[in-house]
Image (cartoon, rainbow over all chains, first blue to last red; front, side, top):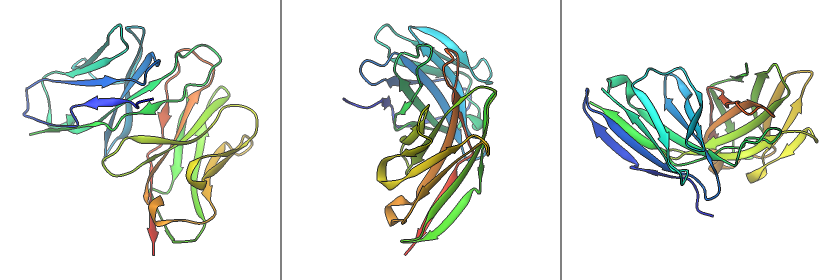
Length: 116
Length: 115
């Protein structure tokens, strides 16, 4: 099976712009989570989507949003970019998170965003 | 709520020496525990996981970890370090069995392997 893919891999934007990142989960996985990774804050959970619905959300401002499509592909959007948004954005997919089953997440290579 | 503490942001070992990366967790429910490895400019790769059952878990690349409930620990070990083990390692915990659980990661431990 192909792994989680993320596009683009690298991105340079300027302050005030917006950006959209894309994630294609492993075939058959319906849950997609997004994380922000920075040297100072480490890995921080952004949000999780399952069946096109946001199930869980981390502590990020409303400038960060996401969505999931019927084919389980997901996008995240960051509006009005700030310098502090420079980070590696990781997407992870997992199988249907039914009650009682473990939630192993499989990560993509990430999108490295640089905000100038 | 769950949380993870990784003791030591940097660990340096010689090639062939024992690798020990420490992880302590806090969870109000029985936890699921994970170790991930991240190589430069890459995403996270799952090394091993503990859900239920046997407390000694074997993973890829010769790594293993032991779940010790009494010590709330899930330390990662490898008997003999290889140069290719140099990477950043993350311990993570999730609330097993809950529909709305999310995974919490430790701050990471950077492993350096000296020749």
